[in-house]
Image (tube, rainbow, N blue to C red):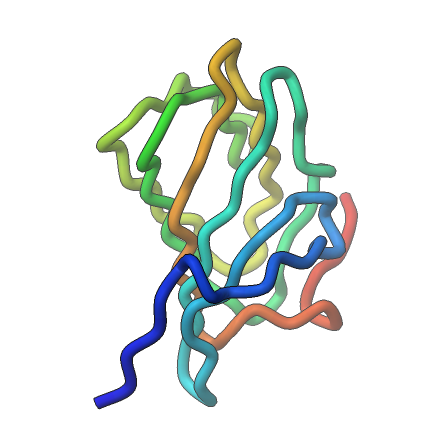
Length: 113
């Protein structure tokens, strides 16, 4: 078993502009927490290989995936398939998500649409 604490995870900025703290990164998958301040947005992008699941843990915002726009809030989980262009815009309280990627997140698998 490998146990990691979010409090010990070093934040870094991903290629799409979000600040994340990665908890696990294996050859098969990754798990990270991402946070956007009120009104902040990720740059619209896609991943050619990675499937992502976003779980909103705090706040909310607007998520666009391949032209479909939905409000998201705490407790919502969204599946983003490989190749789907997406952008997350934080609401007035900001947004915090857990992001699961399989295969794991990689800068070289992030492309801008």
